[in-house]
Image (cartoon, rainbow, N blue to C red; front, top):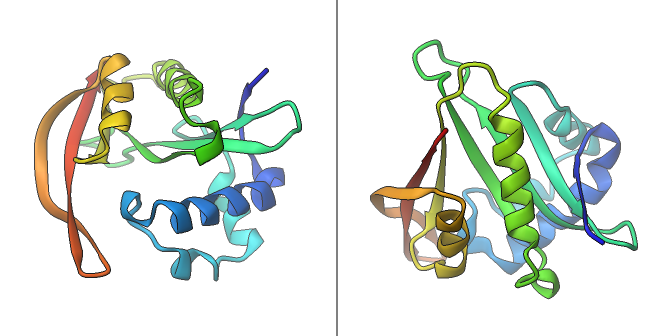
Length: 168
């Protein structure tokens, strides 16, 4: 049975392990790089994980207490954009894909985000070729509102990103 939990400072080591794995396995899917984040201290990761009403990281934990999926929600803090929140760093370990864990993580994220007073929409970006992720997001009501050409560049290759939104 998979548990979805809000991660906190005490999960820094587990989080760093899956995050670095994600950056190695799917480097094209993230704005950051393994080379950059492998240098992050556990204290920095812990600070990044500290939940607040406007920012949280969800983790999917399996029966063996392993962290097998993560996703981050962060609300805009600017006065004119704080009606929006963003999804970052969605990842499920390859051996756990296709089991509904991503959907569970995202559904929990949306439900928690809806509790943010005054939040009207949740935005995310996804590599345009990532059809499984786009199918997941669409199943939860997200819709594509634009495409950023050459949004990411990795090893000399460009990747377009679809811009998606869920109005709540």
